[in-house]
Figure 1 (cartoon, one colour):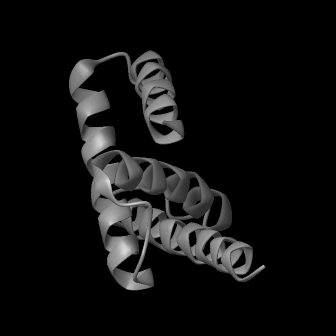
Figure 2 (tube, helix red, strand yellow; figure 1 turned 120 degrees about the vertical axis):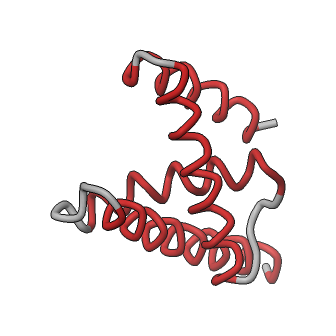
Length: 101
């Protein structure tokens, strides 16, 4: 349920910022790719298309904050994947500690 709400929020914000449907579609596809790659590297994630898009979008935010010089082209995609991996690793650590408690 939270993933769906976040996805709707991302779509609205993305459409407002990008001001075009094709830009929004590119953003969602890129976020999905980054989320899937991060899930494969870390080994787990929320799963599903919505979960991958949310992970990829949050990873893009983290990646661009941590690596601000990598904002163009393929370097932006790499920064987003790195950010998504960091986000999933932290999420997995907190989810793992919650289960063991």
